[in-house]
Image 1: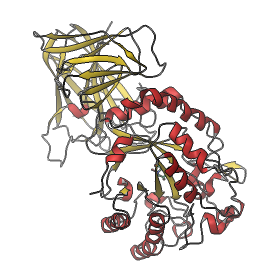
Image 2 (image 1 turned 90 degrees about the horizontal axis):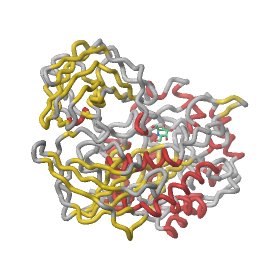
Image 3 (image 1 turned 30 degrees about the vertical axis):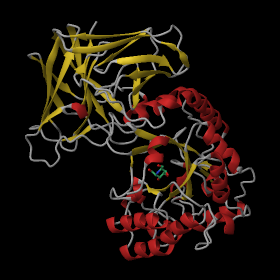
Image 4 (image 1 turned 90 degrees about the vertical axis):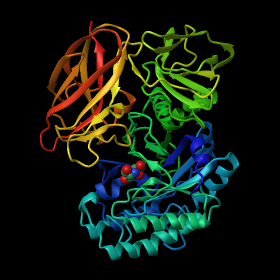
Length: 570
Ligand code: FHN
């Protein structure tokens, strides 16, 4: 078993999508090609010989390995994953086994990976390679080979098994061997889009990597879950803490490879919120840059990464080597990470006082990472009637950081948490799908199992139902809302199901729709929508129960549930 210690401690890495596709930069024949920059060959239906001819023009004279690695280091990133070969089949390193590579086919003639390996050594970053093992639109036998596939979309296309096996033996394995023997120690190989690969083939690639460099990790996208760690969807944020080792690859704008017309840059604030959101779920953040054909990382990417780095210089302790929040639920003021006896409160919504419910371990000391000399005042209370532990922290008027300020809490021991789902200080009661008790009446295998990202997906049988226990300290009227989350990028979850909620002897019901979007860092790429079922009136209590049943589930429209929320009315 490969040792994941460095990877777990790193938490933050740089992804680099760089290849011939940086030349057309999302255009062909003067017209924008829809989709991702690195997909221009397929999406633009470019004849292979015309795409190959791009190599003759590729001369990234401004490429400076030192500048790229110094930027990653300044951003606080600890590893760097660069496309050694993407789906277009072009090797961005010197590949003696295949002439379609940057040294043999371009006027540039240098090997950027050799230069990056040197620079990574100087800066103490781990160099890692992205390698598209199954899709290769250029090599015969590769999945999606442009001419063989005849323009069919990649997901529907098949490759003859023996042609694919031959491609694996003749191109993939020799190239993986080159990558692991030409550049010194490599942190990991980031395989991607396994599509047609068999389990045996995925395993044999993993074995090859480990036989050449036993400490080199293999990404989950090698296929069939045989990697050393898991990869979530592109830009995907789980709803709750994930168990095991996971990473989310993510974009700074909306594309990976350089696209001259993609100016949809996230803000520093959004990036920091994504970083803390992922760290609080126990997920590594692999953040992408797409350098130009001249070899430069675009200016907006550089500025954003430098800003993230300034934050990391002060607050990195709350990210590196930490684990997911030990609390069952999320707090309205921000997110939590933990390392040993120390909790980090990453405050995104600054306020005069914040409340942490459920922490049973006493606090020794509290301070802001930005002002380590000064102690923060706090009070710990335990309401025996409601059995509710509350820690209140008084905060200075001004936030030390406009985006995310970090409070460290030194505890007297490892955090012990009461897992009751308590009403939050903002009054909302959030009942996440992954914390529901499941009542399975159907005979569907794995019915209502929480997905790795925390949603309760594919609820398709009305014999199944859910319930949650929760506590509320404020009596009053609450709107009951069901939040659906989409398992797909940029497409809402199916709607039209009728559900029935029951709490404190009151029943609410309604048909779910996609009319009210929920906006959060999480829902930018995987949309979420809330539907109100009506309101209920609750007394205060520590042992409330909400039950959720599905009355009708139309064919083809299973429920993908994020949470049920009770929101104070008035
Ligand atoms: O198809 C690729 C895409 O071009 C890009 O490399 C991303 C990065 O995670 N991976 C695939 C899609 O998931």
